[in-house]
Each structure stands twice: as C-alpha cells, then as structure tokens.
Image 1 (cartoon, protein in one colour):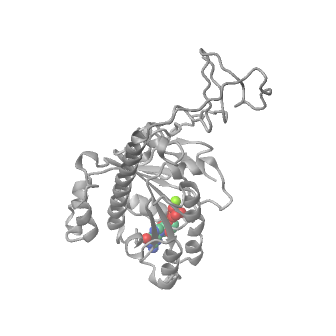
Image 2 (cartoon, rainbow, N blue to C red):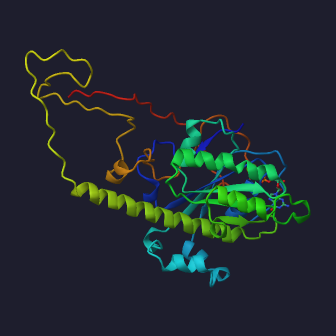
Length: 337
Ligand SMILES: Nc1nc2c(ncn2[C@@H]2O[C@H](COP(=O)(O)OP(=O)(O)O)[C@@H](O)[C@H]2O)c(=O)[nH]1
Ligand SMILES: [Mg+2]
C-alpha cells in the first residue's frame, strides 16, 4: 500500500474555513475508478491511459483564477454559477488562489488510522468516484461516505459529490440510473446538485464538476465562518458565573481524587488540559465541536510511511515532502508556576 499523505504536517489549530487561499478536495474511490485520470484532466487538462492496477497516493496542486473560470462562456446562464456570483459567499477578497487534490489510496472499512482521519479533517470537499463499468465500485462508496460521516460528524454539511466516471464506455456500462438514484437517496444527497457523470478521456463534464465543487467549498467555508462568528458573539454575551468554592474545614475528609486536593497556595496555578494539542485555536475553534485544525496555512504535504513511485508529471503538479513526527501530548497535564 502506498504511504498516506497529509496536506499539513502540523497539528491543526485554525479551522479550515479561515484558509481562504487554498481549496482542498479529497478524491476517493476504488482502484481503477478513474480518480487519477480525472485529477490530471482538472490539473493540466491532459488524459492518457494509465496501466490498471497502478495506484499511488499523491497531492496535486493547480493555480486558480476563479473569477475567470466562473465567467467562462460555458457557464453563461448556469443557475448555480449565477446564484453564487450574486451571493455573499462570493467575496473577491477571499477567493482561493490554488486548489489541492488529494488522490487518496483506497481503504477498507476497518482502516482506523489517525492519518486517514487527518486527511478527512483537512479537506474542504470530497469527490467519491465510481466506475460506471463496475457495480462493486458504486457499492464500495458506502465505506468512504461512512468514514467521512464518522470523522466529521453527521451534522457537518461538508460538500460530498458522487462522480460516475468513464461515461464514454457505454457498451460496457454496468451501473444504471436506478442504482445511482438509490445511492444518492441513501447518502441523503440531492441528485441534481451532488451527482456528476464525467469522461476524463473525452473531457466531458470535467470542468463543470470542477467549478461546482469549488463553488460548494466556498459556500461551505462562508457558512462555517458565519457560524463561528455567531458562536463567538454568543460566548461574549454570556457573563461567566463566579465559581462557588466551599471553604475547607480542618476536619474535612482527606482528598480522594486529583480534583479534590484541598486549598491551593495563591502562587500555584492548576491547569487541567483534556485532549490537549498545542495551544488551542482562537475563540471560534474553541466553540466548535470539531477537533483542532491545522495552524499552518502553507499547504505543505508530507508522506508518512513508504512512498510509492509517482506518476510522471511536472514538478508543480505533484508535491510531496518528508515525514515530520507529530507532537505527542498526554491526555491531561498539570502545570505549576
Ligand atoms: N475509457 C475511459 N477510460 C478511463 C477514463 N478514466 C480513466 N480511465 C482508465 O481507467 C483506468 C483507471 O484509471 P485511473 O485514473 O488510474 O484510476 P484510479 O486508480 O482511480 O486512479 C486507466 O486505465 C484509465 O486509463 C475515462 O474517462 N474513459
Ligand atoms: Mg490512481
């Protein structure tokens, strides 16, 4: 199996919604489902046959001129694009300048790796790809969808798009509309917005999917920033109550736990840190039920275990770096100063 790649090596501290420079899209699906072909079509507009069975995990970066893309004549009169251009989420000062695609290696339902979770937490949208010539590849999408749900929480409406690939292979097609509709219903995703059928070979629908995914990321991040702001305002209006500390008497019973330790000298400060990472994110992050996010806005990627041979492509197309050990923290600690 190939090594797992992370966009950011550092433990996350700032929520992804505040990273307005880069959109991160994680592409999942079985081996052979057309992930790499789709990404290469998006990143450099090319297609070439890839030996089946060859897979590796990689991150591909592409520069973005989102206003130019949105004003492409192909999207003239497109309802979704027009609606986005007219919405508050279209903020020209905060448009991404780059997009990172994580071409994820397939995984099993029993893969509980923390790195996999981090990949999912560090992504802004997910493309779940299946091959229209393989019914099994469609059924396997459940694994990826469940994992996203488990890691991000069911209330997180992070964009998830279902992508049917190899639309040009009509004579070998095994997946029809009923199966697709059933999958969309099971995933509770609207068919008309979250389903795309593409052919990377013939370059059909690829640009449309790319642009719609970027729009969804922008809307999602905007919504997340709005929610974080609201939580912050709510927290600021709540006046904290004075804690009622009982005065210990000389005959009180002896301490039984680390929270029951009797009087503390005034020059001693006890800090109890549960699930501590590095210093926690600013206010919005603390209000959020999400795990801590990456501090780094740079999109350095690291490879954690062994790296497989990478597909030939230009240096700015594929980025990997060396492994950096993550800091380990105990579950709780007591600082005396
Ligand atoms: N006919 C056709 N073949 C495709 C298309 N996309 C990918 N393939 C082929 O399907 C195989 C698997 O594609 P690949 O991108 O490597 O899938 P991955 O393992 O999910 O990354 C390769 O032989 C590709 O050339 C497509 O749109 N049409
Ligand atoms: Mg591949």
